[in-house]
Length: 347
Image (cartoon, rainbow, N blue to C red; front, side, top):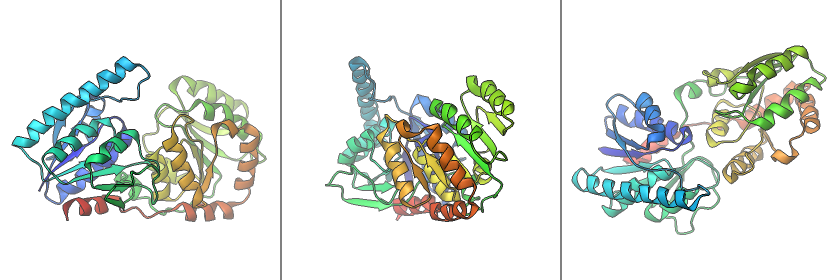
């Protein structure tokens, strides 16, 4: 079977697409992955052996400038025409889109030639690009059991979960280390609010034996290293975590933003968390709320994320390992997303 996988924009769209592509190639299908220039190198490095690549001309439409919005729509339109012509000559049997505006041209082209199309939504609230593309799609696959904003005329909604990397799956259900270890991560660029609130809160804690792994912006590494050292807090401060699976497994609690990949990785391994959603991103707020409902952690607005609140919460949690263990079990969600998506697409 010839399967076209459309992705692009950010790693949150790309890594799940690559995981599914790897499984489809393993099953013997012919896979082509389309993406935009922003993630071309990422796809090139991560694509499975035998999978082909295709480039689409696309960028986000969310820019504040009206001119930039028009340019972005023009790019998507040109790519939609180009893929429509390509599909006319080399028609795939299935199209699987993983969201973002770079997926829209493939979805439109598939609709034009009546190719069965599947759209995957990473977040607990449907994104703008996916909401736009839903008019041409009959099957929506979701990362969370409930997703807000799904159009009422959607034919099928299938809860598959979000594909994660093999190294994350390999750590599923790992027990907490039970050694007062805290992981702080604000995503690839770090989060300034975490750098401001977390260190002060840790210094004010009763338990000074806590060990902190703190991922931050490159320009903040030296300052935070000095702060922790001056206050006799054991800490590993770094700008990038290469082994995220290992960092999660070696933590009793995680503090961070609530992008879909972060939330699902913690659910897959089973780790308690305090999520501080990015204020301008309703998707992150929905993801954090979905996680908190399980009892596996907290979702707190950035405006309420204060040193006083965090110190109190950390004292309560790290003085009660039994509670952390129970939260970890509640956070754990079995992840079979790669196989479920591959089965759904090929059946």
